[in-house]
Amino acid sequence: MINGKELTILMPCLNESETLEASILEALSFFEANPTVSGEIVVADNGSTDGSIEIAEKYIDRNVRVAHIKNRGYGSALIGGTKEALGKYVIMGDPDNSYDFFHLMPFIERLRNGDDLVMGNRFKGGIEPGAMPFLHHYLGTPVLSFIGRLFYHNKIGDFNCGLRGYNRERIMDLHLRTTGMEYASEMIVQSSLHHYQVSEVPTILRKDGRTAEPHLSTWTDGWRHLRFMLMYSPKWLFLYPGIVMFLCGLLGMIVLSQGTLHINSVNFDINTLLFLGGLTIAGIQAILFAIFTYIYANTTSYFPVVDKLSEVIERVTVEKGILIGLIVFVLGFLLAVISLAVWSQSDFKNLNPVKIMRITIPAMILMVAGVQVLFGSFFAGILKIRKDNDE
Image (cartoon, rainbow, N blue to C red; front, top):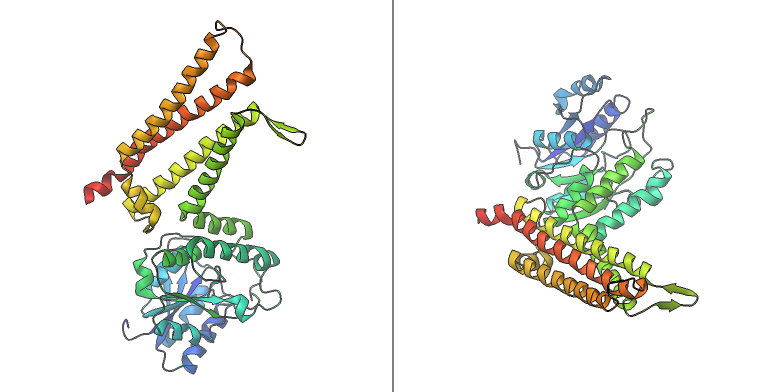
């Protein structure tokens, strides 16, 4: 424990004068009802001007402190508040009267048992009527939680719950950096990527006690959460879509290069072949982006990448990539030479475009793809320079 305290209840605050005092009193009642838990309450103020600071300071003699966080944003307030916390464990929650600060023992018990992060689950604990907007309840939170489980291999059912407990030292070791609402996702994502012990306990969500508009913006903050989860998962953002695009484009090109494809009354010919070629190039580019992201992550510790793909990337040298790119380019060049030979047979006069483009389109696609891979290999080598030098 830090200074003999086991728990810090952390409340990020920005103009919460309507509900802050009720939240503080509820948290204080938790400590009174559970004397075995020694702790404090930290109000991480983010620039309040409505008297919130004065409300919190009324309870200084009851182990309530105000941490003045200069950098604005939900994430900034929680990062700063966590640094100021004196407890071994931290339980964070918004002081808007929606979260239950009295029934915290399930969080404490899980933390005492060694869990690094303990999430509240509002769907299991109960959501009071009117406590969660319809879109959040049935679309936003379930979708984001599903994506979080799919991308990061955890079992969290309520990714966006703001009431959660964590081992302060372990979370500090993650060096979380997002300053907005997406901080809530970053904590889970980074904990999952670092193989922390993450669990859930049921918690109740009550109706927000404020009359002012909530700080959360449905679409803007929802997008920020989704964007964050995508940016920390190059497999789902780049690799898997890239593989699908590449295979669909390549297989389609192989089929249409043989002749027109008839499906019922619809004919697929050289125009479709051209679009499929573009899809193939886009797929290759997305796969290269995935490789670049993995190398960048390994070099900068952007996020931990220890899996089969990272091992494969480590084995593929710049020289191997250049060789692959040259082979692909040469294949395309040979097809271009063949197209010239066909043209020469007509004394370089007009040709049947349908016939000749079955050769020229694949030729162009292969040459462009070869150039992509060749220069992409050099760029991958540049990204690896600092890592190689550090070793």
